[in-house]
Length: 394
Image (tube, rainbow, N blue to C red; front, side, top):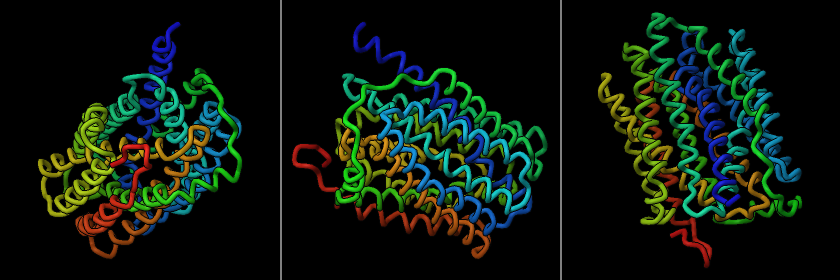
């Protein structure tokens, strides 16, 4: 069997896993905050609950990544993380108070955030030796799932009368996670060839790499501003618009993300990773500024097309940079560290400040305006991502 023949079934399997997992994201991300708002949660309660999820993600993701590297088995770690996340998602169906939701999301943070780093680890390692293979073109199947889930749920909630606190949101979230956990458990990806087991000192040494630290700082700040995006659904509702606008905006944004992920191999050949990250950060700042001033369905939906820069271009470039900065036998730890520090820690601060700002500023537009300003900081950190002498990062 040729190398391509051996890799193709794994690539198809990983596409399925990304697709099924990001169905859960397509349910949660656009609609869970509006769902909590419909239950009567104020901005501070929403921000606290989301912050609990993000804070737990930091030790959770790093621990799962370290276990996967030490065992040389990211596939097994993925199975157990998926099962734990499915259980926590099911409990959200019955949670009604801020305390209940916060405690469940805290527990969810110890398992769910490990899933993407583990999937990314298997994917990056599986395409490393295959000419023409692309992480982005496998990962885009997750984006397609997000589009389908966000659009479908938006239509469903509108058909159900856009009820505040519609239980369909947590029920479908729990069902989507259950399907993902069952499929991953029934057909886990094969174990990749094992390298040398990392020593604890090597894991700590990752934090001594100045380039990685600057990347983590820039990505954490970026994640902090994107936390305000969970208030897009609230912005739509406050404008008196239907949930179909939320679904359409999210779907259009992720469609742009899919295009960028598919085109990323071409973009990477033409521009450096530093240039691509700079474009992503500058475009995101402009997006938040424009969104803070937008009114009505057409502009609110159209501006989501810039999500191709905010996530598609940013994520593909950042993952490639992590791949170049982290040794192969520390891949799961490096991916988990990147996810924990950026999405989890940066997100925790962003969620809390976004919830605080929503209450204090009297609405979502001012949150997006502040996010536009903060997004300029990671842009200034890009020049500090100095290249290795033998790697083309600039």
